[in-house]
Length: 99
Image (tube, rainbow, N blue to C red; front, side, top):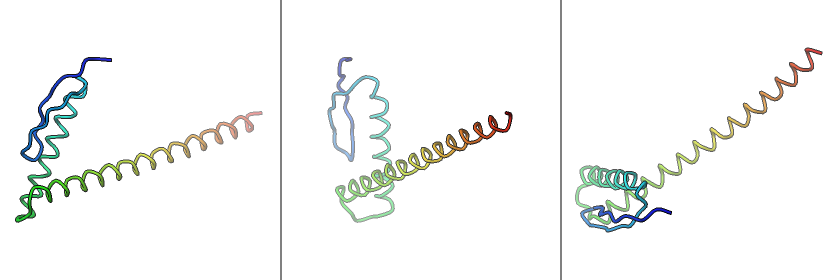
């Protein structure tokens, strides 16, 4: 196991000091950047709310995106399984037809 490194992340104008694996640093920083970009987007589109409202909206957006990605992954896995079954059936038919 590698040594954890300290990083400072800013989300919604608040600083957070984290200790993470070195290989995760880029992903964590990109994720924090995406969160802050979405907060800015919601601030622009929905004036008059407070920061907690914007963070909540970003959380809902992020959870919805993750759920949608999971659904797409399941669809790809189902399609892959169906194609594998079809391939086995074709192989079997070709073997029987060649005899």
